[in-house]
Image (cartoon, rainbow, N blue to C red; front, side, top):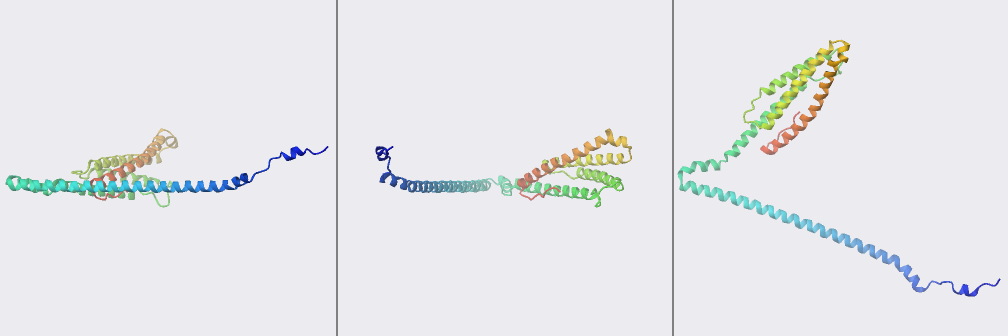
Length: 250
């Protein structure tokens, strides 16, 4: 059969313009990508400039407010001095204002509270040292001695805390001290019960007395974490309140 010449003739042939378009497409895509990158970089610079301008505006407002507060304080002091000069009877009151008795009182309360806090730390450290577990670990041979020392250390710590002078002490510090004293009482009682179980029969150790002892030990461990969190909160609060560095509880 003869080949169909018309079919051969009608086959599509790529034009020069089509070839140019296919070659130009990658170049156009690259240019568009660069344009997008340039736009993103420009937008980033605009955002950064806006943030810097906002920060500068805030700094200026803060400086202005500080200046106004300083001027207000200076004006109040000047007015008080003028009143004192016109009225000698008010001179003593003006002197008291200049001396900032509230500041002095706050500083005194802060110093007393810090001393109270340090005494709490001393009591905590002494109790921990007294009831420390044997270096070789607990065993049947030394368990009775350890529990006895733990009982005595807890009671001594509780009594020492309650004997501290709480006059002019920050209430949050004394409230924490009360929790500490209560924990030491519970710790001493648990240790005392543990000592009694050492001499009890196996049925008692496995029965209700033994279960109560284990429950009290778990409760003590859980309350330790709670008291530690409360102690850190109170420490940070008083450091801010008095401008003094309160050390962490041990």
